[in-house]
Amino acid sequence: MIIESIELKDFRNYKNLSMEFDSKTNILYGDNAQGKTNILEAVYYSATTKSHKGSKDREVINFDSDEAHIKTVINKKGIPYRVDMHLKKNKPKGIAINGIPIKKASELFGILNVVLFSPEDLHLIKSGPSERRRFLDLELCQLDKIYVYNMVNYNKVLDQRNQLLKVADYRPDLISTIDIWDNKLVEYGKNIIESRHNFINSLNEIIYDIHRNLSAGKEELRIIYLPDVEKDNFYEELLRNREKDKRYKTTSVGPHRDDFMFKIADNDVRKFGSQGQQRTVALSLKLAEIKLVSKIINDNPVLLLDDVLSELDENRQNQLLNNIGDIQTMITCTGLDDFIKNRFEIDKLYHIENGSIVSG
Image 1: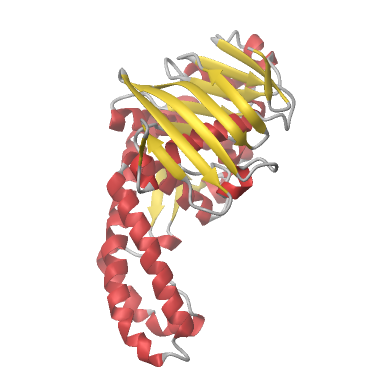
Image 2: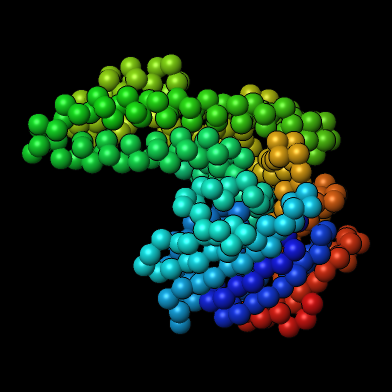
């Protein structure tokens, strides 16, 4: 799949932007804070309905406007798609596919698959569990609509259960309904745990060889899924912790507390890995993610590299660039020295300045 073009109106610092992309390598360069990343953010919105930065819709709308528009034209195995997204400050976003409005944002998933690599991903190994769960959710939601269904419903039930726990002290008549919420939480949660298990197992099948290659055969990397509770014990653990949940007024067990870890030679890379090892593991994870997505969708995803080359040494830069192949890639950077030095082929070049394309 490739993105043929994108149009932005009142998105971040872009009042009006229209640009076409090459099917291979597209370089967006310019000084910091000029709007390069905003273009990748708009592409990410078109694939996931969300900002990769975690920003809310109202935060990506231009200060001088109450709404923003993104129009993305995609070619997927010869079939054209147009994704129109209407972002509003005080109302839910509107999305249309080929001019037909969709009722649920989740219906967009799978039209466009992207893999994003940013400097934040280099810190995924040593960041908190919530960032690693976010990685799992964002990737699985692009690949599996059933996962989206289970995740949306799990979060709704979790919120209802937590609300019940908060009012239980002065509405004891309501606490008897907690069994209903527990059963639904387990129903959706067990599916989420199983999907995450399968995803991590699939990643492990790919990442092992990638990391051995990156480490010149010196290291063997495994990803270990750390579910907060196993799916077969979920209901029993909810019951066992119910009094504690009432006391603290929150649900203390479930996949909303999951984590995963990276191990090299039985050592936790987060605790014992050097900074260089952690960066190599992050690179291995992204390269494995690209291959896994390609395998699942039987097509190449679009690769977004957001100023990540400046954070990698020359060897890791070369490893990344040499693994791009024929994937459509959009790269943001402040200068072109890295590409000239590596004799990297540039198919289309854009100079971004103050929310405008000044050349390209």
